[in-house]
Length: 374
Image 1 (cartoon, rainbow, N blue to C red):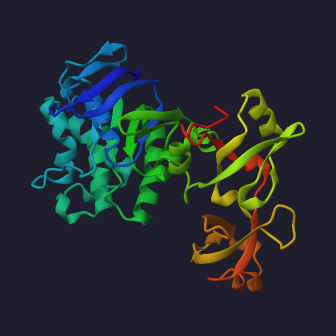
Image 2 (tube, rainbow, N blue to C red):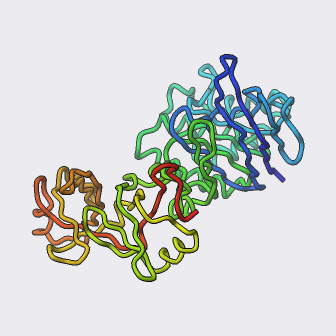
């Protein structure tokens, strides 16, 4: 068992700056939890409090039902992988991985067995006699993970382990961490500012801002039903388009009128709005770039706009467009759906029409910025 429970955990520094506010979270055994948010949101501080590297100002941290607030990091049976690898430069890869085992005075034959087994899993067997300076960034990170693996810890803590790697290597290491999780079958708590890492790695995601939890949920839950506007814009790339519009009742349903164009809200969402007694009037309407489609002039619901920037991303185009009232939106267009002559009509300063359907709309209160359907 390797459950972790945080109850009303708070971190206040000497200058009365509150870094983490009343953090409550239950992490189940063998769950992969990701803390994600912008720099300074408190995610790494929370991880360090779990590890015992930061004192807890208030609240409790439990591992397997035992309160560990006063336990030293070495007594918590956790393993931590840092952003900067934290390898000993004068030691070989083998000795770096074996370091904690030698502190435990484990017999050398057992150390050899554990280190070589970890190296094989991580694909670094050929580097065991090298020093860290002779390794690439990705290889060094594998060594840091190997050092954590051999400890047979209850909980793995990883603090932005991929942030120093280039984009191609980050993608490769993400896949390796998924495979590693399957092999180790233990509890992972992972910190990142990269929402792509959060969405691809986590069983559940904890989204933080200014020391507060904004939402906890599966990747699908936070993407499809963001609790508030911050979560909606943080999750998804490019970020969600947001526009002010009017929400009105019409017959049994609702309509919105962005840029003076009337669009019907999907029947299911209309029922949800009615059940929540959603007020009519001004709302913030959110639509993800991938849910906006190209339309034809004169088509019902078509919104005229002008292309400002065309970004070729390989399998898709990211069109930055400006509506007639000056609102900027981003549209993702799969290139496989386009004929060669259509692409020419999507260049800078080209005029085009876009639209979106009622079932992809998100509605937020303009004052509280909370999702009206929560």
